[in-house]
Length: 574
Image (cartoon, rainbow, N blue to C red):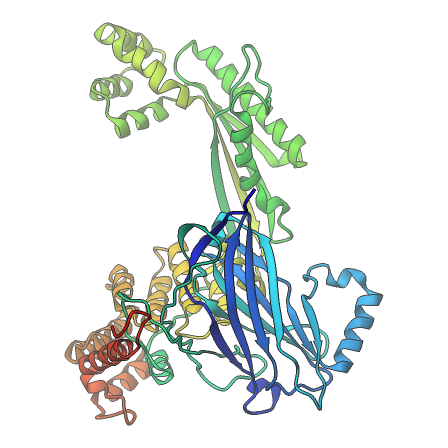
């Protein structure tokens, strides 16, 4: 049988990145990291990479780790085997450590290659080819590169940079014998300042030779622009949250055999429903990040039948479900509380108000004015010959027979490194200040830096600090539209006034910017006065004129568009 290769459009082929290591105590050193191939064949994803270490000068006690990572915004993540460039002494130390403590490496993937550095000969280029089982989430995954250094005991994170924002456009081309590729202009990741071992490793993209037509070009900010705006914008410190609680809830619709209240996982649709428990109780088995405070199980019954029978049924099913949780997940029984609602009239009212059947108003009036033990159900049965009651019996009552499980977790404080690992997988475990700790691993103006602040604003939509800081992060990428949306949420708070001034300046409204800066003097005196001085200055640098922000932005847009028009594609001049 012929093998079928499903080829995606490769968005950034032959994308070369320059990692400039001033942290290695020698100028001009660089490692070229090139994505040469990416394709899906059968049920596997195949990646081809090349690494050129020829310019690196390394002392014998140091080892550099380069780990490619596939990740998407919805939490999908796969770390690929790292490539190690190691000095000879460092390699001997590490090999001795691995031999004496085999458990010390279990949390690290086995290296793809350990490249020994020789002082008098340049390291040979490394060809990196790997195939991994393909998952759906990889269709919109980014390819990242984590850089770490080890010169004594522990690995130190230098930074995480993006090789490709998205490997594929997500559209399957069809049955091909080779991948179909396209190119797209990619704005360079900005180098903020010289790098030390504790700072992020800067990345510089080599400009592709071919441009894709119909690309929308945003305003492109240079390193100087980002540095300038970073000093102008407000990044506020959040209140440290010492006691973190996480409440989660899930609803279960369990099927029961006639005359039984036991939980039978393989009965009808129960297996699918019970899978919800795995995600609900995941923190219980996810390491030492959390401890369970309590679980509450509430059983609900529908109004049909006698009150006594409904009460017994709801109480019994809640108790059996609590016992199932204890026996399946090994949770002590004293952690669980059970309650019940014999007849869920409140739930019925919610369904009637949301779905509005023709009889909704009349039924809601009966529920409101007739008591449970004063003929409420009898009035509903008699309404319009019993037609509304029969409809509710089949349409609404089965949805009222349910179990609701709520779990409260105590989440411990996490370090910045732990927050960096959790920000994309379990942001709900992080406080606002911990999320900002993860942001320090990325350079201002990069997409990853922006994403951390936007995740924080999504998790804390009512928090003034979260929205102001998110506006600052998106403005560093030139996205004034998103910045406006964040600031409109908190415009009445005086702490937003300085950022509103910077936003007005970026939109080419220096007069409005001055008004906001003057208002902000009473809130952030030093920053607001400094921004007023910049605004009134003729020129901050030789090529940056703040007093005419509109012209600056227009010139930058024209510059980028002119540059794109000057790049020919495969079909001739654009």
